[in-house]
Length: 145
Image (cartoon, rainbow, N blue to C red; front, top):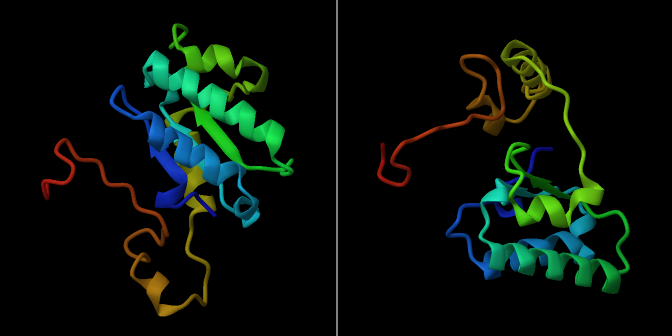
């Protein structure tokens, strides 16, 4: 399954140390193995101080934890070569192939389709393309627009 709201932190220059630490703790705690995928999106936007704390918390918890199969993803802009996060986690870096918009859309349509015979709750997502995930983009999020 895709990550839920409690598993994703969308980073900005205003993202605080505590927010990052909480996500890292969730990802590396004993209960994190229940199919959750923890993600830092746009981690290259973190300020230097928060990036250093991310590195510190991550490596400290990895060394002290008995969990070896955690699911923690850090997404960065490949062009943000001045980001401390990219440097600190360089050994873990995976480069994704360059895909066209059509290839991505085709993949998502096949992967995010509502299975047939699902509960009535999922039926709310069936129209118009039988997708079970919707993305809403807003210039003024939280303002009802």
